[in-house]
Length: 105
Image: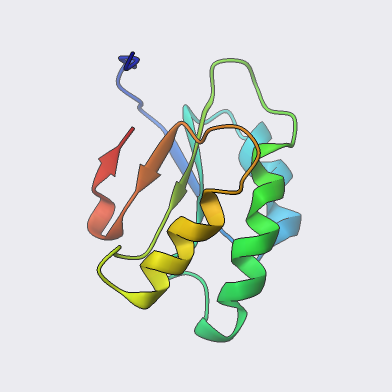
């Protein structure tokens, strides 16, 4: 069953390779917190970011906050690798955003 969410007013997006910023994303007061695996992550550290971003979904966060991940286009090699990585993340991500900000549950 698909859950309908209230509109989110504030979004916080943090690069997937800056693990030290994850606590700020969880505690900032935003309605939605995303870890970005797309264009904010340099190509040379994308594999590390994909693996390390799993910790984003296990860290404590404010009740009601939606967590998600922004991935590269699934029509690209990076997008396919992003999808493969998030399939192994603990717990479901609330949202997965593709390139250009397209969002879906």
